Length: 111
Image (cartoon, rainbow, N blue to C red):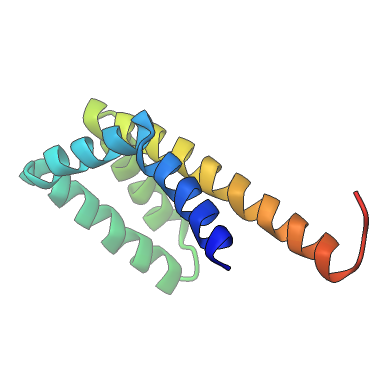
């Protein structure tokens, strides 16, 4: 069990030491100190809730898309989202590999 924990820690450290993860942390800190970005994120979240509660009203959807486009046009936010997507892909890859490993292990399937 100790070797499994060690291997898992290595995988986690690999992701945490990646340039994308480090960039995300730095960009998030910068965004957290920018009131305009924080306000726009808050508005997007509010409109997302309104949109769902309205049973997907088209007029609310248009306003939501407008806000999301405004947010995406901010370079720091865009860079943050690109790095976050890469990190999520890495996490998904690890999850998929573990699922596959356990599927084969538990079903006695040889590779």
